Length: 440
Ligand code: ASP
Image 1 (cartoon, protein in one colour):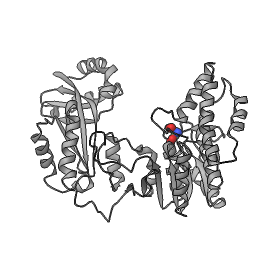
Image 2: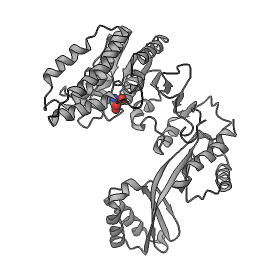
Image 3: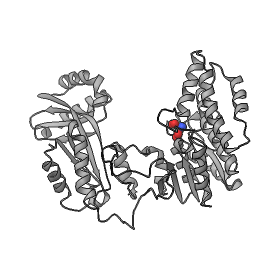
């Protein structure tokens, strides 16, 4: 049995709905469909979820909301009419409007985006729609109560061999609707797949999987056919804008494969993510993907023979902790310790942090630079293969790119290099050229 989650762009209009139906009906194993709210058909359009948040703000501050509400109604009505569905969108909103007031609960209001997608999709498929408030149990901070949700989903699945479920929300134990984090439909899909021990969790979106590099930097970058959950973690941590790592914890724990697919190109196999890859067809290439982020700052704290002063190391780390700064990387020299943090995070706290470091840690000097980009070269096949970092340094050296930081963990799944922000794109292009394109 397969769980299919369709994101907002796969539900943007009637044409997209038709693609979903074709995909679902082409495989009888696709028995549960999880849907997002209607997304954008084109870049100038707004996502329905954003419009619903805005509608709530209009209500709260007593601003006229009719035009906004009409825009939302129109998006769903055009889908209903184009698909020839019976569900009366207008009547749904007429009823809703009677209850709208400054006291309207935000989460309940925003959840109708997903709910309406599910109602329309279910009618079109001729399947039942199960309200997520009857299937997904959340705790007060919006995280999923896996145990109770699993029980509910199993009971439902015994009753209904197929169903459509809205993503992104569930109910608190007292029955009140609660939203998850933005992008939460991915979590819903993952919970359902885990609860029902699905054979695979298919996440249908508008790209053909996870790309080997950002296509805005490397236009010919191809999708990664297979990767491990460990590699996915490295790629997302360092900026690849794909699924949020935490959204797929449930399937990862049970080693349920996750397949990212393109609704607009269902013939493509997308990216398959698993814990272990046995039939590794990528063995020729060592690198799975290249990703990175700009705008890191490096704070270097100088202290003679710093390793001989463990209390200074501790004081420095405590100082960062006091200022709520996450340390992305640390490199130590004989007389210094360099700590890498995001510029954005440091911005407002910089002067307080520096004062704190100078007063509370017995250090000699402090230096600082703030235009560092970090690039991660990720690949499960790099492990125990001598010469990869050598090649990496030579390739960058040949392009005159100065490496300012290097980091590699002992699991050897990624090598991270720090370069000037200005060299970010060239570094990624050079590494792609050297490690991926050359290998065919
Ligand atoms: N519609 C929600 C959002 O925009 C949830 C989702 O699509 O996953 O964040």
